[in-house]
Image (tube, rainbow, N blue to C red; front, side):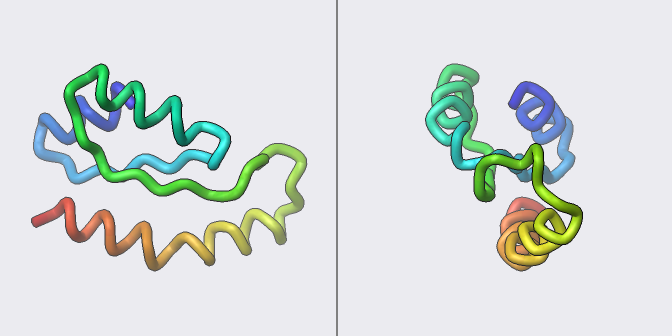
Length: 74
């Protein structure tokens, strides 16, 4: 979260990606930093997924991630 906030502050459009397990933590940390970064949550867990499952997760998230990133780009 710190990297996302710092890079956005430097003018680099950012979207953080985390698993659903970390929704509350990410939102709490963003509030504590006084930031409102764009975030995308993907299914948990990631570890122990097969390559094919990871590709499916990435494919499913791609359009939303791109929309969020382009929205941040202005």
